[in-house]
Length: 233
Image 1 (cartoon, rainbow, N blue to C red):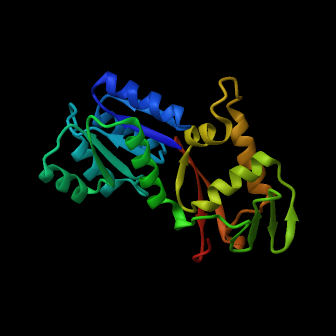
Image 2: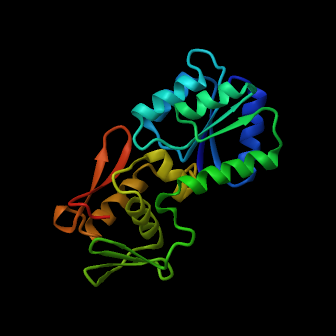
């Protein structure tokens, strides 16, 4: 899971980065709410953890802005030393998904992160089924195969993972950085055209177009989005 952390205290950023990374997540750190605001306009995150009191833009203002502008908006956890009950209510009413008061133990923070992600999971499936249907497409998670109108399409393992990422979240924009971190773990020497070639292959192999209900669109300067037509997906 890709998590954005915004806090003006370096010790807190380092603590959260170490904690979340050990738990298997990938963290991008920000010193200010405004820096995170700019990042949310061009990048993709699964979760945002933000402090309240920060220079330039407070965490509360960031939550309000994100709920009104970012679509879809990732879940947001407010992690702050402000403990007044009125502050908790204000943050939750502004759109925060949870509120953690500093200091808090590692176990509690991780448990709250997991709980928020479970609540926000697309489809809220407790146990994904082996076969996933998306219009004329059928994904078999056990064999990593895809069929289109019953015709099996040959995909590599990476192509299957990439296609499934898009089909599970139609109409959601994914940044290049998010895709590379999620599927390639941001391999340092990965050729920049590797993702482009995989995108081109799944477009062609899956025959993505309005006639099949989906189109894989390039978003200039950002990444890619699978558009669903006629309510498919």
